[in-house]
Length: 465
Image 1 (spheres, one colour):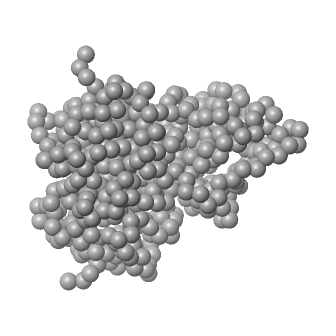
Image 2 (cartoon, rainbow, N blue to C red):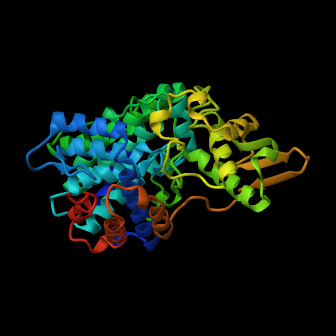
Image 3 (cartoon, helix red, strand yellow):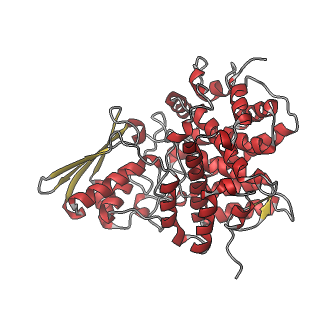
């Protein structure tokens, strides 16, 4: 039997246990779980998520069995719950990121939950499954050239790679053996989808891609559990996943599984501190820091030059850039908001939610101070700046000039401690009481001691009035 890429990943996924994980990995994975729960609950009341929830309940509601929609309590099919819960976790655009263009946590966590709930899967088993799922995504996307080629080929990397994490986590909690896990990955390759046209056009279908990938990943694992026959070479074959989504055959896949199980790629994931696109997080951070340090006043600003990694200025791909550079989802808008307020909101109409992507700049930017600053910002894409390490030059009307940059520091790679702090900022806007949310945070912090995940799910449901 050939030792294909799918076989090597399946061998890792089926063998990993909570006890085998380094302390740092345990900490980081619990942080990813907490981030997914918190940001998902923060999006619960959005009209878009409510519409998606209503559709799934109408089509797939169950009297018993299945899995729970978080923050609601309605029970639907397991694939339906995976879809809706991922939709919550991805909606605010505050999910975690890897290589800027994949978002593992918002897909793997709801996939694992959909299988674990009601099956007696322990907290340790849940952590191990989420670890396996996230590590499979980050390994498959570990070479930056893979993601660039996928995006340039017209596909969106997050759902295309994310489905494998959802399938892996769900398959592990289903108890798939090695052959069945290979089949789950092969079926995920067959089910993978998602184009960048929506991101290029600035429309909303991208918000449905990650939930669909999550749903399809869970379905792939369930189908694999029935004994579906699949191609061992589904990933690295002549007409396999990588060729289909990149148009290239001669990739070297040795680095994908190098040190697998000893070195964890997932530790390089980042968290989004604000509900805004990943590559805009650090410019916001830098703008807030400079405004506070130099007492910058918006009315004194003449010009802002922002140098960023070139791919961050041509989202979603240099081949298919979004021509809208001034709207509420833009870097310029995020920087202008941060400079004006010396902070950035966690809630409110100013945030970059997916629901206002289709609005024009005039609809979005009602604040004249923000609008004026946006027009004074020049974005400069360069290969000299690493991803997430921008440099900002602020020129005032009196010719004073201030320069700030992020360079070489670990940025936004939140451990559990940092995620706990972020959750305190989210808590006031949630539908559940802060005391109840505190219990949920504590339960995730000590998830390895939980007999199952059912208490976590229950703690997301608002008390009856």
